[in-house]
Image 1 (tube, rainbow, N blue to C red):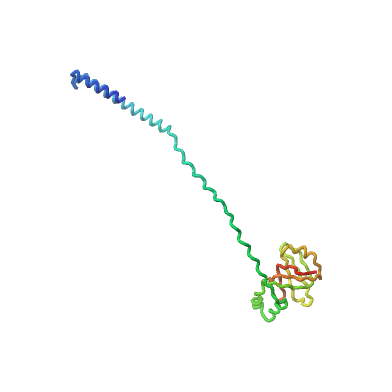
Image 2: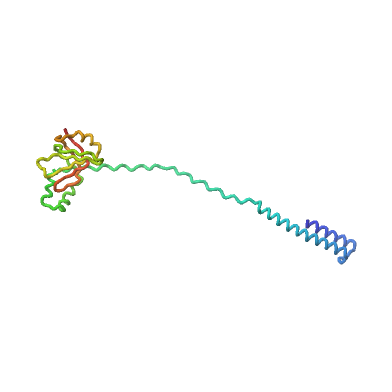
Amino acid sequence: MLASVAVLAAAGAIRAAQQGVGWGDPVVIGLLGGAGVCLILALWALGVWRAIAGLFGRESVPPAAPPPAPPPPAATPSVDEPEPPAPAPAERVTTQRTPEDLWELFASLTDMQATRVIEPFIGQWMEISGPVDSVGNWDGHFAQVTLNRPKDPYHHIFFMFRSEGWVPRLATLATGDRLTIRGEIERIDRISIQLTNCEIVDGS
């Protein structure tokens, strides 16, 4: 539109010059004045059109889409670690001392002194034979057995069976049945010895 107005104004000026009309002629002034008015109106219309186009153009632009989420990391296949080998069972050490030998250690010592002396025997194994005196009930943790010691009623030996697998065998025992029991020394004092993890070696 601006180009058309400029072309019309230029054409009018060229035509006036060919006809010998000066720039001060009223015709030229009117022609240029009309072209100026048209130019101003064209600029105003162009500005309004650009403003409207910009307003609608901004509203019609869709918001930018968010960036796509990164893919989840690939799962690392699990590798089963080999289980450590089970510890080897401790080797049993069997003492050659009798219960009477161990009690004899207390004869000339205080309890504090005797405790240090008998400490090396704790954890060693011992076999004792004799007739059954009593068999206690299984309480969920152990069953206690005692043997009759008529020659030494002052001292006592307690046999603790801590495996439930021995319960059926213990249930068949009667007072007076002769047994040989192997057990691990757990406690020693002046009047008693307690063996744990006991097992029947031989019995009738």
